[in-house]
Amino acid sequence: MSPALLVLEDGRVFHGVAYGAEGETFGEMVFNTGMTGYQETLTDPSYARQIVAMTSPHIGNTGVNGEDPESRRIQVAGYVVREPARVASNWRATGSLGSALRDQGVVGIAVHGTRALTRHLRDRGAMRAAIFSGTDAVAPGENALLERVRQSPSMEGADLARDVSTKEPYVVQARGEKRYTVAAVDLGIKSMTPYRMSERGCEVHVLPATSTTEDILALNPDGVFFSNGPGDPAAAGYAVDALKGVLDAGTPFFGICFGNQIFGRALGLGTYKLRFGHRGINQPVQDRTTGKVDVSAHNHGFAVDAPTDGPFDTPYGPGEVSHVNLNDGCVEGLRLLERPAFSVQYHPEAAAGPHDASGLFDRFCELMERPRPSGGDR
Image (spheres, one colour):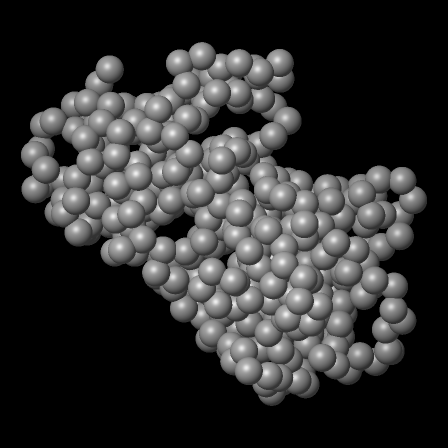
Protein backbone atom coordinates (compact mmCIF):
# COMPACT_ATOMS: atom_id res chain seq x y z
CA MET A 1 0.00 0.00 0.00
CA SER A 2 1.21 3.51 -0.80
CA PRO A 3 2.03 5.89 2.06
CA ALA A 4 -0.31 8.81 2.74
CA LEU A 5 -0.36 11.89 4.95
CA LEU A 6 -3.21 13.92 6.40
CA VAL A 7 -1.89 17.43 7.13
CA LEU A 8 -3.94 19.89 9.21
CA GLU A 9 -3.39 23.64 9.06
CA ASP A 10 -2.35 23.81 12.73
CA GLY A 11 0.58 21.52 11.96
CA ARG A 12 -0.85 18.19 13.17
CA VAL A 13 0.07 15.36 10.79
CA PHE A 14 -1.44 11.86 10.61
CA HIS A 15 0.41 9.07 8.78
CA GLY A 16 -1.47 6.30 7.02
CA VAL A 17 -1.92 4.48 3.74
CA ALA A 18 -3.70 5.51 0.57
CA TYR A 19 -7.36 4.62 0.21
CA GLY A 20 -9.15 5.34 -3.04
CA ALA A 21 -7.36 7.46 -5.61
CA GLU A 22 -3.75 8.51 -5.10
CA GLY A 23 -2.66 12.13 -5.36
CA GLU A 24 -3.54 15.21 -3.35
CA THR A 25 -6.69 16.99 -2.27
CA PHE A 26 -7.51 20.06 -0.16
CA GLY A 27 -10.58 20.96 1.88
CA GLU A 28 -12.06 21.67 5.29
CA MET A 29 -11.43 18.83 7.75
CA VAL A 30 -14.64 17.64 9.44
CA PHE A 31 -15.94 14.45 11.04
CA ASN A 32 -19.16 12.47 10.70
CA THR A 33 -20.54 10.44 13.62
CA GLY A 34 -22.91 8.22 11.61
CA MET A 35 -22.59 4.47 12.13
CA THR A 36 -24.28 3.76 8.80
CA GLY A 37 -25.02 5.52 5.52
CA TYR A 38 -21.50 6.17 4.26
CA GLN A 39 -22.63 6.11 0.63
CA GLU A 40 -25.29 8.76 1.25
CA THR A 41 -22.69 10.83 3.12
CA LEU A 42 -20.17 10.61 0.30
CA THR A 43 -22.69 11.70 -2.32
CA ASP A 44 -24.32 14.53 -0.33
CA PRO A 45 -23.56 17.83 -2.15
CA SER A 46 -23.40 19.59 1.23
CA TYR A 47 -19.94 18.01 1.66
CA ALA A 48 -18.43 19.84 -1.32
CA ARG A 49 -14.86 20.98 -0.58
CA GLN A 50 -14.75 19.04 2.71
CA ILE A 51 -12.51 16.18 3.79
CA VAL A 52 -14.69 13.88 5.85
CA ALA A 53 -13.43 11.59 8.61
CA MET A 54 -15.74 8.78 9.67
CA THR A 55 -15.81 8.05 13.41
CA SER A 56 -17.26 4.58 12.80
CA PRO A 57 -14.22 2.27 12.67
CA HIS A 58 -15.31 -0.03 9.83
CA ILE A 59 -16.23 1.55 6.51
CA GLY A 60 -17.07 -0.13 3.21
CA ASN A 61 -18.51 -3.38 4.59
CA THR A 62 -21.59 -3.24 2.36
CA GLY A 63 -19.83 -1.92 -0.74
CA VAL A 64 -21.59 0.51 -3.05
CA ASN A 65 -24.73 0.28 -5.16
CA GLY A 66 -26.71 2.37 -7.63
CA GLU A 67 -29.75 2.94 -5.37
CA ASP A 68 -28.39 4.80 -2.33
CA PRO A 69 -26.41 7.76 -3.80
CA GLU A 70 -27.87 11.20 -3.08
CA SER A 71 -26.38 12.70 -6.26
CA ARG A 72 -24.74 11.48 -9.44
CA ARG A 73 -21.20 11.41 -8.03
CA ILE A 74 -19.14 11.42 -4.87
CA GLN A 75 -19.07 14.98 -3.55
CA VAL A 76 -16.50 14.97 -0.74
CA ALA A 77 -13.08 16.48 -1.39
CA GLY A 78 -11.37 13.67 0.51
CA TYR A 79 -12.13 10.73 2.78
CA VAL A 80 -10.58 9.52 6.04
CA VAL A 81 -11.33 6.09 7.53
CA ARG A 82 -9.81 3.84 10.16
CA GLU A 83 -10.20 0.36 8.68
CA PRO A 84 -11.45 0.01 5.11
CA ALA A 85 -13.34 -3.22 4.53
CA ARG A 86 -11.29 -5.80 2.67
CA VAL A 87 -14.42 -7.47 1.28
CA ALA A 88 -17.78 -5.93 0.33
CA SER A 89 -20.64 -8.15 1.45
CA ASN A 90 -24.21 -7.16 0.61
CA TRP A 91 -26.75 -8.54 -1.85
CA ARG A 92 -27.24 -5.08 -3.39
CA ALA A 93 -23.54 -4.29 -3.78
CA THR A 94 -22.28 -3.65 -7.31
CA GLY A 95 -18.71 -2.85 -6.30
CA SER A 96 -16.37 -1.91 -3.49
CA LEU A 97 -16.09 1.51 -1.89
CA GLY A 98 -12.37 1.69 -2.56
CA SER A 99 -12.94 1.07 -6.27
CA ALA A 100 -15.66 3.74 -6.39
CA LEU A 101 -13.31 6.27 -4.79
CA ARG A 102 -10.57 5.40 -7.28
CA ASP A 103 -12.89 5.51 -10.27
CA GLN A 104 -14.12 9.00 -9.33
CA GLY A 105 -10.69 10.35 -8.41
CA VAL A 106 -11.42 10.85 -4.70
CA VAL A 107 -8.24 10.85 -2.62
CA GLY A 108 -8.52 9.11 0.73
CA ILE A 109 -6.42 7.85 3.60
CA ALA A 110 -6.72 5.03 6.13
CA VAL A 111 -5.25 5.96 9.54
CA HIS A 112 -5.41 4.24 12.91
CA GLY A 113 -5.85 7.59 14.66
CA THR A 114 -9.39 8.61 13.63
CA ARG A 115 -10.37 8.85 17.30
CA ALA A 116 -7.41 11.14 17.99
CA LEU A 117 -8.28 13.16 14.89
CA THR A 118 -11.89 13.61 16.02
CA ARG A 119 -10.85 14.66 19.53
CA HIS A 120 -8.38 17.11 18.01
CA LEU A 121 -11.08 18.68 15.82
CA ARG A 122 -13.47 18.91 18.77
CA ASP A 123 -10.80 20.80 20.70
CA ARG A 124 -9.42 22.97 17.90
CA GLY A 125 -12.41 23.18 15.54
CA ALA A 126 -12.82 22.37 11.86
CA MET A 127 -9.85 23.60 9.84
CA ARG A 128 -8.20 23.48 6.45
CA ALA A 129 -6.43 20.23 5.61
CA ALA A 130 -5.07 18.12 2.79
CA ILE A 131 -4.43 14.47 2.00
CA PHE A 132 -1.27 13.57 0.11
CA SER A 133 -0.67 10.00 -1.04
CA GLY A 134 1.83 8.09 -3.16
CA THR A 135 4.72 10.20 -4.42
CA ASP A 136 2.87 13.36 -3.33
CA ALA A 137 3.24 12.23 0.28
CA VAL A 138 7.01 11.71 0.32
CA ALA A 139 8.67 14.11 -2.12
CA PRO A 140 8.18 17.69 -0.82
CA GLY A 141 8.51 17.20 2.95
CA GLU A 142 5.93 17.92 5.66
CA ASN A 143 6.81 21.60 6.10
CA ALA A 144 6.26 22.29 2.40
CA LEU A 145 2.95 20.42 2.47
CA LEU A 146 1.81 22.37 5.54
CA GLU A 147 2.51 25.66 3.79
CA ARG A 148 0.34 24.56 0.86
CA VAL A 149 -2.50 23.70 3.25
CA ARG A 150 -2.29 27.15 4.83
CA GLN A 151 -2.54 28.76 1.40
CA SER A 152 -5.70 26.83 0.45
CA PRO A 153 -9.10 28.60 0.55
CA SER A 154 -11.19 28.79 3.72
CA MET A 155 -14.82 27.71 3.99
CA GLU A 156 -15.76 31.13 5.32
CA GLY A 157 -16.86 33.28 2.40
CA ALA A 158 -17.10 30.28 0.07
CA ASP A 159 -19.99 30.39 -2.43
CA LEU A 160 -20.40 26.70 -3.31
CA ALA A 161 -24.16 26.27 -3.79
CA ARG A 162 -24.09 27.38 -7.42
CA ASP A 163 -21.22 24.92 -8.09
CA VAL A 164 -23.16 21.83 -6.98
CA SER A 165 -26.63 22.93 -8.15
CA THR A 166 -28.38 21.65 -11.23
CA LYS A 167 -27.63 23.74 -14.30
CA GLU A 168 -31.06 23.16 -15.85
CA PRO A 169 -34.50 22.82 -14.24
CA TYR A 170 -36.03 19.35 -14.04
CA VAL A 171 -39.25 17.85 -12.70
CA VAL A 172 -39.85 15.02 -10.24
CA GLN A 173 -43.38 13.82 -10.90
CA ALA A 174 -45.90 13.23 -8.11
CA ARG A 175 -46.37 9.61 -7.12
CA GLY A 176 -50.06 8.91 -7.54
CA GLU A 177 -52.47 11.83 -7.71
CA LYS A 178 -50.88 15.26 -8.03
CA ARG A 179 -51.94 17.54 -5.17
CA TYR A 180 -49.39 20.36 -5.19
CA THR A 181 -46.82 22.10 -7.35
CA VAL A 182 -43.56 22.78 -5.47
CA ALA A 183 -40.71 24.97 -6.68
CA ALA A 184 -37.56 23.53 -5.08
CA VAL A 185 -34.44 25.67 -5.29
CA ASP A 186 -31.43 23.37 -5.52
CA LEU A 187 -28.67 24.70 -3.29
CA GLY A 188 -27.17 21.20 -3.11
CA ILE A 189 -30.31 19.08 -2.95
CA LYS A 190 -30.23 15.37 -2.12
CA SER A 191 -32.17 13.10 -4.47
CA MET A 192 -34.29 11.65 -1.66
CA THR A 193 -35.71 15.07 -0.74
CA PRO A 194 -37.89 15.69 -3.83
CA TYR A 195 -38.77 11.98 -3.70
CA ARG A 196 -40.20 12.41 -0.19
CA MET A 197 -42.33 15.30 -1.45
CA SER A 198 -43.44 13.34 -4.53
CA GLU A 199 -44.66 10.58 -2.19
CA ARG A 200 -47.08 13.16 -0.79
CA GLY A 201 -48.52 14.15 -4.15
CA CYS A 202 -46.09 17.00 -4.93
CA GLU A 203 -44.94 17.67 -8.47
CA VAL A 204 -41.48 19.06 -7.70
CA HIS A 205 -39.84 21.51 -10.10
CA VAL A 206 -36.15 21.57 -9.16
CA LEU A 207 -34.55 24.91 -10.07
CA PRO A 208 -30.92 26.12 -10.19
CA ALA A 209 -29.48 27.85 -7.13
CA THR A 210 -29.36 31.22 -8.85
CA SER A 211 -33.06 31.23 -9.76
CA THR A 212 -34.70 34.59 -9.12
CA THR A 213 -38.01 35.32 -7.44
CA GLU A 214 -39.52 35.74 -10.90
CA ASP A 215 -38.20 32.32 -11.99
CA ILE A 216 -39.69 30.70 -8.90
CA LEU A 217 -43.10 32.37 -8.93
CA ALA A 218 -43.48 31.91 -12.70
CA LEU A 219 -44.38 28.29 -11.87
CA ASN A 220 -47.33 29.56 -9.77
CA PRO A 221 -46.25 27.09 -7.07
CA ASP A 222 -48.37 26.04 -4.13
CA GLY A 223 -45.17 26.06 -2.08
CA VAL A 224 -41.47 26.89 -2.34
CA PHE A 225 -38.67 24.77 -0.91
CA PHE A 226 -35.01 25.75 -0.36
CA SER A 227 -32.66 22.78 0.02
CA ASN A 228 -29.53 21.89 1.91
CA GLY A 229 -26.18 22.83 0.42
CA PRO A 230 -22.50 23.64 1.01
CA GLY A 231 -20.60 26.81 1.77
CA ASP A 232 -21.11 30.03 3.68
CA PRO A 233 -24.69 31.38 3.59
CA ALA A 234 -23.28 34.92 3.80
CA ALA A 235 -21.87 34.38 0.30
CA ALA A 236 -25.22 33.34 -1.21
CA GLY A 237 -26.92 36.72 -1.38
CA TYR A 238 -28.64 35.75 -4.63
CA ALA A 239 -30.59 33.04 -2.76
CA VAL A 240 -31.48 35.44 0.06
CA ASP A 241 -32.82 37.99 -2.43
CA ALA A 242 -34.91 35.34 -4.20
CA LEU A 243 -36.39 34.14 -0.93
CA LYS A 244 -37.29 37.66 0.16
CA GLY A 245 -39.48 37.94 -2.93
CA VAL A 246 -41.15 34.61 -2.13
CA LEU A 247 -41.89 35.77 1.41
CA ASP A 248 -43.23 39.09 0.09
CA ALA A 249 -45.64 37.11 -2.09
CA GLY A 250 -46.87 35.06 0.89
CA THR A 251 -46.23 31.73 -0.84
CA PRO A 252 -45.82 28.87 1.66
CA PHE A 253 -42.13 28.20 2.30
CA PHE A 254 -40.11 25.32 3.77
CA GLY A 255 -36.32 25.26 4.05
CA ILE A 256 -33.84 22.72 5.39
CA CYS A 257 -30.20 23.03 6.42
CA PHE A 258 -28.62 25.65 4.12
CA GLY A 259 -32.19 26.69 3.30
CA ASN A 260 -32.72 27.38 7.01
CA GLN A 261 -29.67 29.65 7.03
CA ILE A 262 -30.88 31.48 3.91
CA PHE A 263 -34.28 31.91 5.57
CA GLY A 264 -32.60 33.38 8.64
CA ARG A 265 -30.68 35.91 6.57
CA ALA A 266 -33.85 36.81 4.65
CA LEU A 267 -35.45 37.59 8.02
CA GLY A 268 -32.60 39.96 8.84
CA LEU A 269 -30.72 37.56 11.15
CA GLY A 270 -27.02 36.80 11.04
CA THR A 271 -25.21 33.51 10.52
CA TYR A 272 -21.92 32.30 11.98
CA LYS A 273 -19.50 29.41 11.62
CA LEU A 274 -19.75 26.67 14.23
CA ARG A 275 -16.59 25.45 15.91
CA PHE A 276 -16.73 21.96 14.43
CA GLY A 277 -20.25 21.71 13.06
CA HIS A 278 -22.85 18.96 13.31
CA ARG A 279 -22.47 15.98 11.02
CA GLY A 280 -24.05 12.59 11.58
CA ILE A 281 -27.39 10.90 12.11
CA ASN A 282 -27.75 11.04 15.90
CA GLN A 283 -28.33 14.71 16.77
CA PRO A 284 -31.09 15.42 19.35
CA VAL A 285 -33.33 18.36 18.44
CA GLN A 286 -36.28 19.67 20.47
CA ASP A 287 -39.42 21.25 19.05
CA ARG A 288 -39.98 24.13 21.45
CA THR A 289 -43.72 24.21 20.78
CA THR A 290 -44.48 20.58 21.65
CA GLY A 291 -41.41 19.58 23.65
CA LYS A 292 -40.96 16.58 21.37
CA VAL A 293 -37.35 15.49 20.74
CA ASP A 294 -36.31 14.11 17.36
CA VAL A 295 -33.08 12.27 16.70
CA SER A 296 -32.05 13.80 13.39
CA ALA A 297 -29.54 13.78 10.55
CA HIS A 298 -27.22 16.78 10.32
CA ASN A 299 -24.60 18.13 7.97
CA HIS A 300 -23.79 21.78 8.55
CA GLY A 301 -20.92 24.00 9.63
CA PHE A 302 -22.86 27.28 9.94
CA ALA A 303 -25.84 28.26 12.09
CA VAL A 304 -28.35 31.09 12.44
CA ASP A 305 -27.83 33.68 15.16
CA ALA A 306 -31.33 34.31 16.55
CA PRO A 307 -32.76 35.14 20.01
CA THR A 308 -34.15 32.06 21.74
CA ASP A 309 -35.92 33.88 24.57
CA GLY A 310 -39.08 34.72 22.63
CA PRO A 311 -40.47 36.15 19.39
CA PHE A 312 -38.42 38.68 17.43
CA ASP A 313 -39.31 41.22 14.78
CA THR A 314 -38.73 40.57 11.06
CA PRO A 315 -39.77 42.42 7.88
CA TYR A 316 -42.56 39.82 7.58
CA GLY A 317 -44.01 40.09 11.06
CA PRO A 318 -42.95 38.29 14.23
CA GLY A 319 -40.80 35.18 14.05
CA GLU A 320 -39.41 32.75 16.57
CA VAL A 321 -36.91 29.97 17.05
CA SER A 322 -38.94 26.78 16.73
CA HIS A 323 -36.25 24.14 17.38
CA VAL A 324 -32.99 23.96 19.35
CA ASN A 325 -30.12 21.49 19.48
CA LEU A 326 -30.00 19.76 22.86
CA ASN A 327 -26.23 19.23 22.66
CA ASP A 328 -25.17 22.86 22.35
CA GLY A 329 -28.37 24.96 22.28
CA CYS A 330 -27.85 26.31 18.75
CA VAL A 331 -30.79 27.30 16.56
CA GLU A 332 -32.29 24.31 14.70
CA GLY A 333 -35.45 25.85 13.29
CA LEU A 334 -37.29 29.10 12.54
CA ARG A 335 -40.85 30.06 11.76
CA LEU A 336 -42.93 33.12 11.04
CA LEU A 337 -45.97 33.56 13.26
CA GLU A 338 -48.16 35.42 10.77
CA ARG A 339 -47.03 33.97 7.43
CA PRO A 340 -46.76 30.37 6.16
CA ALA A 341 -42.99 29.93 6.38
CA PHE A 342 -40.75 27.68 8.45
CA SER A 343 -37.40 25.92 8.29
CA VAL A 344 -35.20 23.44 10.13
CA GLN A 345 -31.45 23.05 10.27
CA TYR A 346 -31.48 19.27 9.84
CA HIS A 347 -32.42 16.65 7.21
CA PRO A 348 -35.90 15.13 7.47
CA GLU A 349 -35.55 13.00 4.30
CA ALA A 350 -33.76 10.24 6.28
CA ALA A 351 -31.08 9.34 3.73
CA ALA A 352 -29.15 8.34 5.67
CA GLY A 353 -30.68 8.91 9.04
CA PRO A 354 -33.62 8.31 11.38
CA HIS A 355 -37.21 8.91 10.30
CA ASP A 356 -38.26 10.94 13.37
CA ALA A 357 -38.60 14.22 11.43
CA SER A 358 -40.37 12.95 8.29
CA GLY A 359 -43.59 14.64 9.44
CA LEU A 360 -42.10 18.01 8.47
CA PHE A 361 -42.97 17.24 4.86
CA ASP A 362 -46.57 16.69 5.96
CA ARG A 363 -46.48 20.03 7.73
CA PHE A 364 -45.35 21.68 4.50
CA CYS A 365 -48.27 20.05 2.68
CA GLU A 366 -50.66 21.35 5.34
CA LEU A 367 -49.42 24.89 4.69
CA MET A 368 -50.04 24.42 0.97
CA GLU A 369 -53.61 23.27 1.70
CA ARG A 370 -54.55 26.61 3.25
CA PRO A 371 -56.08 29.21 0.95
CA ARG A 372 -53.71 32.02 0.03
CA PRO A 373 -54.84 35.64 -0.03
CA SER A 374 -54.86 37.28 -3.44
CA GLY A 375 -52.77 40.33 -4.33
CA GLY A 376 -49.12 41.26 -3.92
CA ASP A 377 -49.13 41.18 -0.11
CA ARG A 378 -50.59 37.77 0.42
